[in-house]
Image: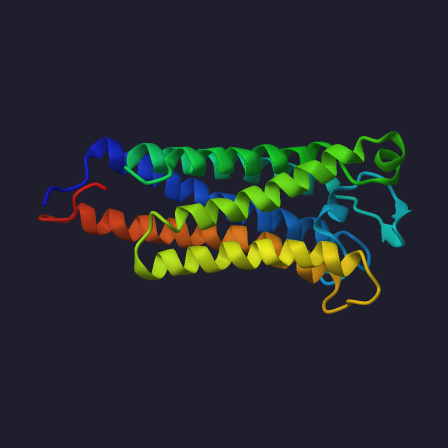
Amino acid sequence: MSTAKPASRALLTGAVVSWVLAAAVYLIAEAIAASAFPGYSYATNYISDLGVPEVATVDGRAIDSPLHAVMNAGFIAHGVLFAVATLLATRAARVRHRRWIVALAVVHGVGIALVGIFSGSQEALESGLAAFHVIGAAMAIIGGNLTAIVASRTARHGVAALSLALGVVGIVSVVMLVVDSGTTTIDLLPDGVWERLSVYTIQAWELVAATATLVWLRRATEPGGLSRH
């Protein structure tokens, strides 16, 4: 077996770095913005509450996010890094369903950028611009989790199963968020928990993909290592 080619190694290394940075930037931006938001609850508040630039009440939730710019920058940066990582990885390695994986990653990237650009503020709701926020959120959550599901078809053994499980949990959680928040007869978990279950699966998959790629790289660069797939 031949070792991984230098060009492929460089692209895959870039993918690993981008995936890790994407997850880190998102979670750190969220934590920083939440720390300045009085009484913010990871269980009952939406993540996008952290990106609202005005002090107001939205759907009964008190909104006051002094560091809204940090969260919005985190949204946009995550989308760019997610798309870049996926493009680098799929260019470096021959994978099945490449076009679907890239397309879904771009959908996620564009969607979460819309979330960062158009807030879910009361002003945006009244002007109609909040529609772009809602559409972006749907694109980001569905696109990101479907990326994990489709990518599971190209992975091996445990990584494939874990990628599939994360994507399925994410999709089911966003469906439950819509169902749970839209009726009074079902109240299994607070909205913030459902939303985070649908979003954090994406960051978890990024770390799974980065780890699996890093392990492959280490094996492929050893003498007599793996051939490029």
